[in-house]
Image 1: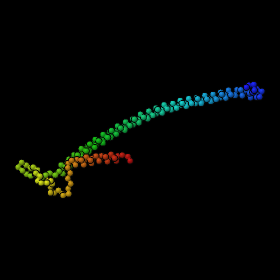
Image 2: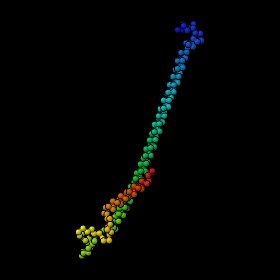
Image 3: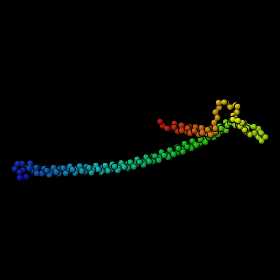
Length: 167
């Protein structure tokens, strides 16, 4: 090939044609080396970012766990206080219901006898209701009064809890 190029191409151009491919190959090698170095640097940067992300994620998880434990502890304290207050109010309500039942209990009429007063035996279907009691009066058992007291106490506590909730 050099034999054909020599007579047709002037000497400076023939030198370029002979050396040009080698220079181009060198330039391509330099460009390839540059992009390879950039790829290695980018891969190292990604590894560093991934490690930093994992560390930040672990730190955030620890902070969230600590906050969750704090919230749980606060909830347990509030729940214990609320339950204690409810139990106190329930005891008070039951005591008030017992006092109400004791003062409003209907007693059968008593009959005087030699050994003291004793309740009169029920004659027929007599309920032992005094004549002064209104005809449309409603009477409930002591158990029903207690059940109403319990339900009212629970309902009031539920209402008080509900109004503390944010809408």
